[in-house]
Length: 116
Image 1 (tube, rainbow, N blue to C red):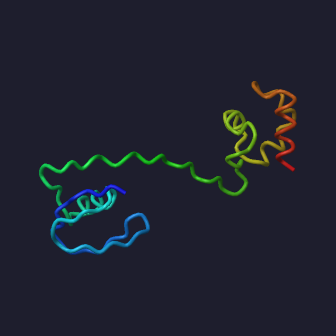
Image 2 (cartoon, rainbow, N blue to C red):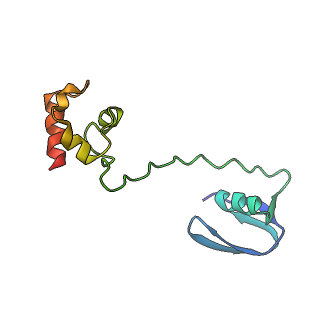
Image 3 (cartoon, rainbow, N blue to C red):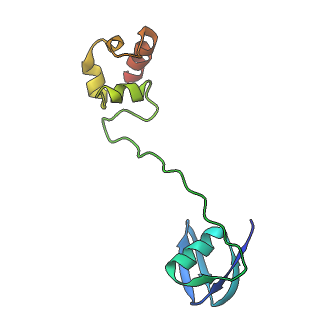
C-alpha cells in the first residue's frame, strides 16, 4: 500500500472503511482514503508539495430487490421491468410472455423456470 503524507492538526479516532485509526498531531503517512477522510473531517491538512490524488469513484451497487420484486439475476429482468412487470406476481399473471418484444419461446421458458 502506498502511503501519503498529511499534516494532522488535531488528535482523533476515526472509523475509515471499517478500520479504526487513531492519529495524533504531526506529519503522518496514511492510506489515501484515510488522508481524504481526515482532511474532509477537518483533522488534517494537505502538505504543500505533496501530491494527494483524488479518491477513485466507487461504483454504486444497485439496491437489492424488496420482497416480491424480481431478483437482480432474474432472466430478462430489464425487459420485464420495461414492460411494467416489476414483481414475480405480475410476471406470473401476465400470460404469454412471448407477446413482449424481445422475448421469444426460449426466453419465456427460462423465465417460467425461474418462477418455480
